[in-house]
Image (cartoon, rainbow over all chains, first blue to last red; front, top):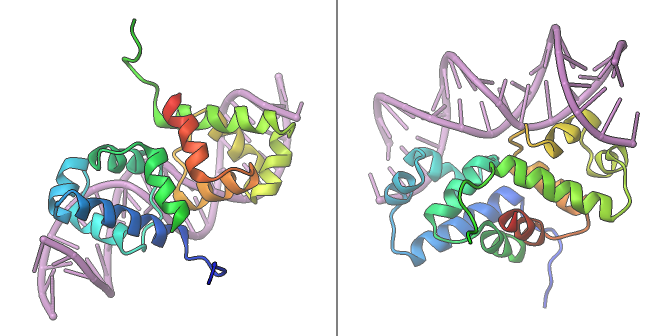
Length: 79
Length: 79
DNA sequence: ATGTGACTGGCAGTCCGTT
DNA sequence: CAACGGACTGCCAGTCACA
């Protein structure tokens, strides 16, 4: 039953949302990183929840994932 | 009829979304800044679209505005 | 293909004040 | 009450070598 309580850090929830969506598209981290115009190792950090990325990179990632930011954050909120 | 074209910068759209929601709640910048745990002058910059804020502060702001991040970004996307 | 530590430059974020 | 300037600190952005 549970609901949750100690919710995970936003960075972790965001990273997971990105990863789930990326895999749904059948892309590798390298593919997505290239599409979003960011670096491969940076994306790796983002998916693992160790980076507190900012607005501009959030937008780039959403675009590369072919979802609106609202859709992406719906998954983050749900996480 | 066009609809879109040169869409405004994410920072500007985000700042406007925050401002509209803040005013709907009848809060001053100082009130909201205190509720979100960020600084007054920084919030001023954010609303004016001059700051590229990061994930953690986005979450704090959404919480202080009493909306989910998805709801907040729906307004940003619409902007 | 991905994870991770380390590194540096620039900006996110704070705080003073004035308009 | 909000915009804006200046100065400061800490952390994000961006990259590499290597497991």
